[in-house]
Length: 333
Image 1 (cartoon, rainbow, N blue to C red):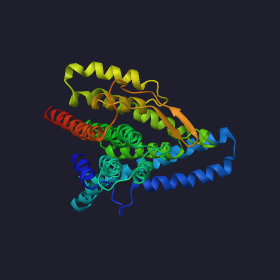
Image 2 (cartoon, one colour):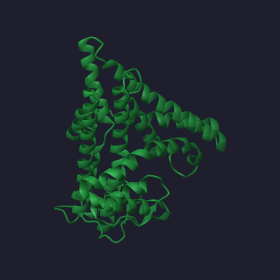
Image 3 (cartoon, helix red, strand yellow):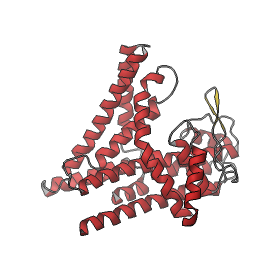
């Protein structure tokens, strides 16, 4: 897992390498077309079809991860086991998004007019690739806020939630359940649910029913990792005496958000980075007033976005260090 985290930070998601999420997305598209053809506009049939898509995709993704884990077992021939281990590390790295998230957010900052050779149209276009809101007409302060919000929200979705499920799988192995689901099996199962939510989890048209199962599963699988980020992030950026105040403030500000996780993840980053997030966003033709987070703090600037990205790197290292220490203590006993 440490090797996978290092590989993710060094390489990220190279375009020349087929990413597992791309294959998940292709199968979602195929299955969605089949379900919609059979279910039509009947809500109960769309819900049933969405549940079937969720079971098939999450189960198949977990099964592929489990097969690679079996190939990496040391009981096999040395050559086969070594090849399986390499695939296992690459697979684990593919489930983490620290490098890709960082690169995408920094690309937006680099395109801003305040940077050399930047312009608003280029910054808006790059921002549109990583956020769900409409970016047309956004000015630099709004672009910076959107970049900070996606950096904080996707830190949980793209990095800490899959890392958490990797740690759970590794813990099961540490407890002696070598034949059960391990880190890659659980990480790919989470990535499948996250991909389902990003592609089908919208309250429009048929997706109001078709995407329900995937969206609910993603909320459930992200619930605990999000809370762990809330309680651990203040420990690496502020005096420990401020821990309870920051956690309470993040819970208070993030609770009104319709998502059980997004508002809280943004809120803890807002308080730890010392910036104000939230406000009015446009999604298609609809305006949404998001809860204001850390309302007494100053607006976002470029250095604040860098702080958020650096906080995520520091917290990832802290999680892995604590996991390593727990693992060593377990082995020693």
